[in-house]
Image: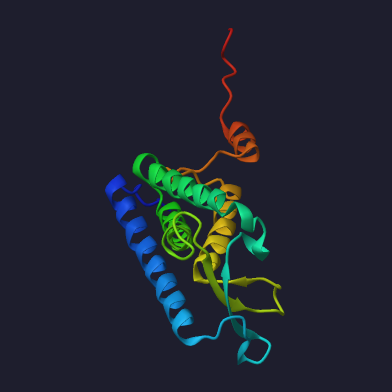
Length: 191
């Protein structure tokens, strides 16, 4: 079975831009609708206790940790976005990595947009969170958070599978040993 040819940098970049844009738009649209239609800090049971909308403006990270150093989260999100853009522009030739990094970038840009453009102002804006699934976790989150979390899991899976950014696979020690055992040995050497 032959593997696909690696992506060209422009193709990888196109995948990343399209996916990041879709996630960013979906996140910002969901936040707009939440702000427009949900009461602040009041539970709206959508599907019993399975899915609850609870609108909050989060100054910190998960569970509002670090709410007095919001600017640090802005810097961290900006750095992550720049690293992803740099990797895509120079090293990503794998479809899987382009998809994962595109979706991750969209999530990062969704929350970064809140930090930059929402009240109380640049660069300490509060992130709009409104999704609560208490049976799964006590946190309140948003669409961007969903993509950030799931794509970080996907990054870990790609790393564990040994898929490199360029689309090649890492040669595992077991594979290398099996290859060495299968290779014919030269018994005439030294005669």
